Length: 530
Image (cartoon, rainbow, N blue to C red; front, side, top):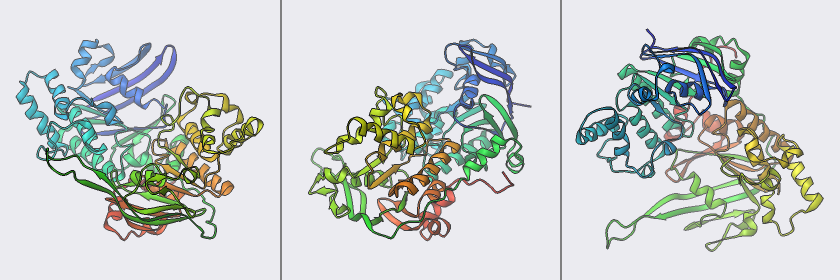
């Protein structure tokens, strides 16, 4: 018997069709993955189950949960179901959590709303649930706030909230997209364990087939609001029938063709760099402590070389990146670009800083939405003593946009008029426009669909041919690092624990930490031709 049965679900918002005749089912104890690109209708299908649809939405068909069609229920009846019979884990835990409430209060909230337990019993139940998801009270007291936890720990709190009342159905919407590979593996193992122990069904929404290849019992592929293929996982991966499914599979395994590196000439030299942060005093008269985020790091990047930097969250990647960009001083060591120091004493050398650019993880968050693209990508011109003006400025804009696969006419548009992949192209155009000597890519493709990610990686390879790019590519996705770097460095607890040619390090790792990272990375099984 099915726990959830969706039959011919169609959805429109203000008359615009969003979902078309979607059908799928989930049995108790089953993990059903729904995959597809952004805009395919995955999340809208989940929101239809919970009846959390926007104003103007109209749904037809049937969504039967444990024998009841939720499309026929009132909002009061749905409030009894949400959190009690159905729990949901969202993609971004910091957004899903209330920053001014403790984690104990947030887990207790669901328990107090749906049960008659007194507050002390609810608190005890919250402590038990948090312990079950790997946050025991001796290490993670209920009085902690979300900002005091790591990304993976926050996601565990969100899972605890979702399973506090042992729901029949758990919906997980991209729960591991922003997590590093080891934390992602831990969260996926936790979700599998909860399903097995509680016998609940789980709807797993993801854009990456590799994430669910070993986890899901069944996979449904959606495109433009429709189901294009659905089958048991092994059968689907070994005998894909639809061209769109084959495209997703190929994009997940995509490799780019980088041009060969030029003759080695040192460009960036990091020499014995350490960076400390001051900790708060433990008492009124106690001395403040210090935390060493980067420990005696040394490496060199040659001109035209593409270098990867990988490691878990909190390993020191971002601190090192800010120091290279001249945004944070270092207590020990020296950073040189060419033969010029990034810092003079403890002051950044602005003449050196303007020779570097950065591409961030979230392109929309890194742009001012009030300005047009032409102004946005010329922001680096402010670094130049004599920036181009008039026709020369327009020519530079046109060249940068054309180089990243856009058109000169896009300069007059606003950033909200573009897709996620196009925004990242614009971010790359902004980094390229002053022809920097070094570009730092900070998780630049981690939030993109697999097909869009493949396009951006191909773009980087083409730009390497045109501009002899030198870059440091920071990522937690080892498959991406394998594709777009010549050499990789592995960072743990502020130290570089292993480095070498990318293929050699990822295929024959020597350090136990590197071996753990590679073992945790999701990999699509080779079950047949795509």
